[in-house]
Amino acid sequence: MTDETNTRAAAEEKSFFERAQDAIESAVESTVEAVKEHPAAAAAIAAGATAAVAGAAYGISKLREDD
Image (cartoon, rainbow, N blue to C red):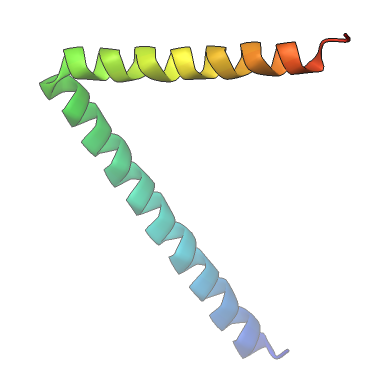
């Protein structure tokens, strides 16, 4: 690879990461706004997600138990 190719690849990689960072920041901002607008719904979603994770953990613990 030449220096020019390396420079171009580094610029493309930086651009990709900048776009990804922008997308993540936008998603976080949208989430925060949605929680502010609908706190009860956000709490219900969080409770449901917590219950799902707890249920999965319980199920895994039962599957791993020795008979």
